[in-house]
Image (cartoon, rainbow, N blue to C red; front, side, top):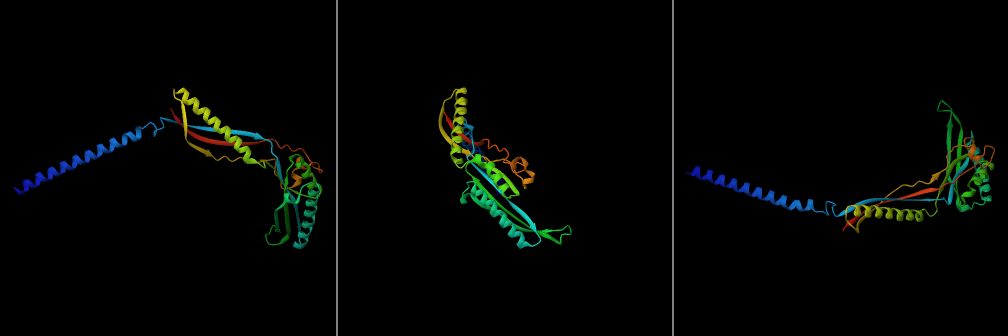
Length: 253
């Protein structure tokens, strides 16, 4: 009799547990459905669009890197010769109208040059370069020629950029926002809806690198820039492309 009562109670307990489990499962599903099917959460009451804006603008500054490199078995003589040459180059650049504040040493190094055995010293290489900021891009070619004529034998290229790059970027950003809104309005109209307020807005980072004309390690390799025999050559600054990108989510009415 006792065994029979225990069996009945156990069966009842299991049945109760099964009912409770089913209730919890059904209740959980019923709560989850509205969150998933909600139009706003699923994007049904909003539209996300991408907008890109670009502006093209002529650069207003040029950065030129030139210098002098020499070798001597005596490290002190090598440095003395280099100092004399770079001083002459910088003086010539200054006489061409570049102020002290726009001339900065960008590299100075003394390296040992070995013979092929890797042990015997052939000499010491001294490298000295200066970065020159040219705020009138039309004079960039003339500055290169001036440096070449003064004895520069290194030329590490010319870079065109904007002093007020942020202003140009803000113009591109305004265009990107307009494009995004145009797209959103079109999508809303085509779907029989009207465009509402902005829900969210995200700006994407775009890397707009300054424009490099060319890059050479030695003037002998850049006859078109140095003019071969010291001419200024032809340098075109062109235009810079500034890009802005945004992602905007609008509410749909």
